[in-house]
Image (cartoon, rainbow, N blue to C red):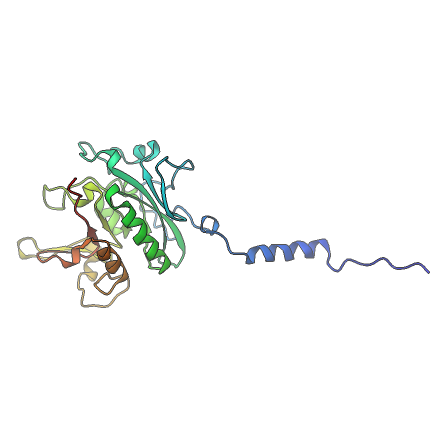
Length: 260
């Protein structure tokens, strides 16, 4: 009697399916975990397509953690900002600015990649702060260069965009903002508006954030002294605009330029 040949326990198709299921169960590194250069909640209001850092890093790139690094401005980045956030007459040398790449958790709870241009004096601070916010899953709706809004701070705030460098004056004045030097950043600005009182009348910017100007109310994404964002920035030596006396800028954290 001939012996029956041993039959395969699994068909090739079944083995392939099991292989796919096994691979899907393996954790992915941050760089392959579905993190995108634009957030999934894109409202489409930015005027330009957001990008990510060039594949070839600058020679001076400093990596704090995977996905969190800063470097001098590449020619590509200079081309993106010149004539917009880096406007005519800008007194800040390109060499004093840094391109910062961060990861963050958006309002849908998804990881996203964000871009910031800041002064080199606070690049390490911001890398450390945003890393801690990311670990804590602190929600930030979007982090884009303000150039995607043609440098229009009001439009950027209305879109609840977190941004830093923009060569401009303080709203309603002729004085340069700390943003003009890349020494200030606005976080979730729609929910944390800028409140002033010209001629005794309250003015809220962005106007759509007026409902969030009453800080006695409880609502999501509010920055106050109990908030992690406030705690991290002040630990790193930043001043919070929500502590100012004659006006309130609840979205705003800034540092002074080093004396040298």
